[in-house]
Length: 418
Length: 169
Image 1 (cartoon, one colour):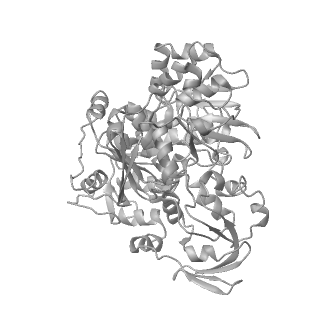
Image 2 (cartoon, chains in turn brown, yellow; image 1 turned 90 degrees about the vertical axis):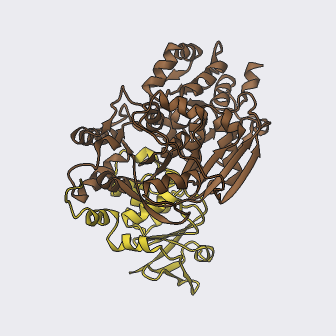
Image 3 (spheres, chains in turn red, orange; image 1 turned 180 degrees about the vertical axis):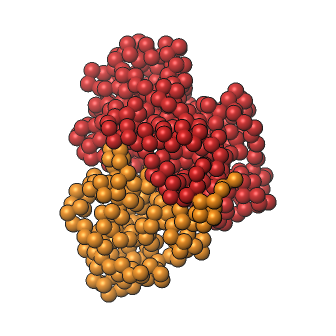
């Protein structure tokens, strides 16, 4: 069995499972946020049970529209807060919280071997920890909150092997944008993407979270990494409970194996309006920009801010660019503050926001007007994603985003640092 | 149940931001959401749509976010059914769970033009293009899915599983 099949079999109390089988799996964690929880709570109440199956295994995080942008979003956050406090589930208030998929691993709430479902499509982020994690809708979450299990179709596994050493400035975002550009936005539909190879062994945990996070942009059910020493170092310092490391069988059958040599990979930029429209930076041409966003559940971790700071440090944001930097959690914010990054960003002329999903989904904190262009470290560049239907989002990693903020056009990091 | 309506034809990868932009997700009221359904990719949709109409699209319909607001907005806009070559997996689950009928058929999609009158028999998966006088058969649902639909959706199914509000412990 593959890693994904091992984890699902264990949670379905089965010796083995095969792709295509429908199984009921026990869940270790159920997640919802301020947009998806209100519907989940209403549906949960329709079921007729009084309490969630286990309050320690239900997590609610206000992150999309908080600190609240308007009255209706405040009402939604309030409804979730009241339910969370009444049920005693795990809840993080503004000021302790942050973007759910940065927060949960950081707090040790997700550990290797878990099955996690969340009413947010980027729940797949936790695959970086060797967990099986997938996004679902609010009604599925309501059902799981009541009974602690959920039905799933066992996905086939597609194994992606990345050969070679990563060149300077190349990170998880470049690897995953490149991958999606090769296989398309439905290239892994319903499948589990397993990421492996020597380039992955060298990749930091923050880089792995970025890759797993965007598995959904290829249509995948999950993105998953084998647990190694880097994972264990990360988890040991944080784990809130015992964990189990699953290993794929040596003879595990993958649906497909895809191999890439990434030793000469260039920074990638995904053009509007699909994450699969990636081009290497050398083929971007001259594209002037109005805004840069560095943050999100994709690239809002400390390493992302450190990469951006290496480029922004001692320079000025281009006068025609609004550069918005959003640490993913309060802890990332504090770490960035203590290391002097926040001062460097502000001195350069960037805005540093409190943790929020805000601009990524066109909520607030950086909405685009018609005709405007943004380079963003977020995960989607669909029509109207960050504002006007006539605006454009170019997806990239923090190095390209920071370099673009300095030069006022889409640029590679070496155009600034050389 | 037989559904009849005119086809609204879309291409591949119609994403959840196109179905209902996130700027409207400060509510989960289906009627409010429906007022913005498809507005970023088809500003005429709301003027054109009539109760019972059918969305017909290429591959990967509903890709992107997990927002259940997407099938809710489509349903509340009056759409009776979505036919696509394939669906993104979260959208597929959400539609089944919330009672928006969805059917997969490559042939029906290829043979449908905007405005064609379609008839859909959900029980058999038969799709008839009345305008073109052609009929197609949708991919059948797995048995478990039929059980879910038969139970009246996931919430009703869960209620039964837990003995209608009995103690979960």
